[in-house]
Length: 221
Ligand code: B16
Ligand code: MG
Image (cartoon, rainbow, N blue to C red):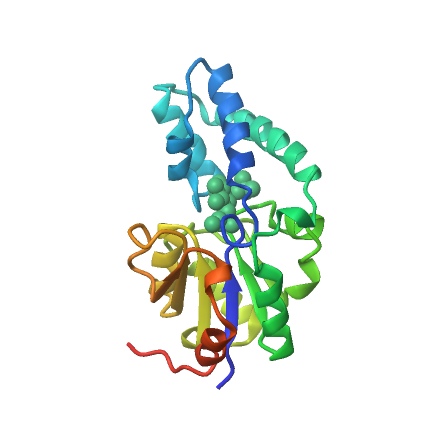
């Protein structure tokens, strides 16, 4: 039974949330209101379009679709300026160890991210070549918690959905993986990601023994 592994990007492979925060905060300030790190938590794993709407609700700002499009371009340009400066030092701890383990065991690897900037980010940090398939915000019509992104990733890998294992840091992502009937591994806080099949603070907590068991496990309903 062939297994496949699907990684989320922001919060799992790299911490780009801090750059999203700085770019959204700049836009909020320009529109005349504050935007806190705590508020930014609500943006994790959420599509750019939805983030824009939430931001405007926070600031009590109404805008036309055209205006929103222009602000999203502005925010994304600021975000891309941060991405331009990224290098491999921004890869989260023990992610390369995990990718090497999977490669050594010939387990296919996919990315399943809401970001439309996923490929350039993986390229900047030097991890693009590890991925056999990339599904990101450019390929899906429905955002997480809809399972579309992960189902498409499984299809691209040629692995049955029930044999895929998803690493995710956002509640919506865990819900999406569960809805796709995949095993979900939460990376983050237990209290937040309680719906995940397994939860770890980060990859340093995940042992090779655990991974060996995982890639041989049958998913139970
Ligand atoms: P972009 P993930 C998500 O990445 C981020 O967590 C979320 O904050 C962001 O709004 C979304 O990507 C879209 O990103 O503006 O680059 O298209 O966690 O799904 O990898
Ligand atoms: Mg994420």
